[in-house]
Length: 341
Image (cartoon, rainbow, N blue to C red; front, side, top):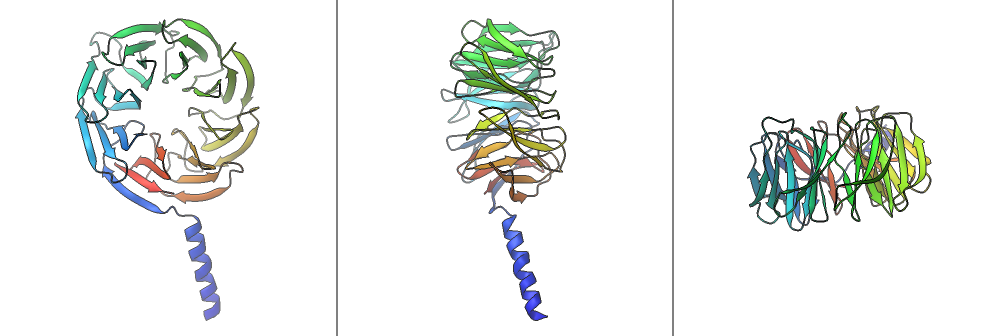
């Protein structure tokens, strides 16, 4: 009987270790509403009260904070040329110095105009790109905040931030139209479409990848705008695609994370998180895919097979976490946490 108990104890301990991360390095109390970004040694995010924070990524100590007056900070902050640009729910855009949080410029919303933010900020070519509820994409000068150009989307509007690469802006519209826009002029050069609202695209190796709420994921060669492949995973795709290590990972409305081949779009595997829909972008790193369903658990999966490696229980995740040097930075239960693999 004693021998059986010892065997049971060994199996229990082994199973517990096999499905446990190394632990939380630090926590910081904050009601996070934006996605989290790691840049250099800083963890960047905004909260429901309009405050924006930079924490030391190793210790979790506050480096600086900036108080905005536009309400909750939305979407993903953008970092470019030593500056951080973030958006508030009322349509205001703020740019601060990355090093100390000092104000560079503010873009104030117009009170008599539908000027709310559809998503966060994307930056490139000296510009900050913002999708707004007035159905326009704005390009602001990163140094001054002045409007350089605007792009008029379809009247059904915008729901996701654009992507930028090599002088082009890639924008998905709510009605399924996909736009390729010249970053200097704001003129549409080409595009395509899907059967539903398009999430923020991803760019890799000269191709652009976009996903849609109609369940489709598509790849287009940017040069000459050549469609490469189009697949449908038969489940609303609720996250932007993430591309790395030859695979594309997306989350779905029914709580799955799917991995597709970057080469031909074939579905490599699907993992059922069984924890609510997946609205936070997956992360691909070190041969693993990290999934973040709204219901709570963080899942660490083998990127080739989809096999479960580890899991960590949280109080629920909505905003997209970040990953750096073997640490996941996520928000849950009114705090930001640094979780070691």
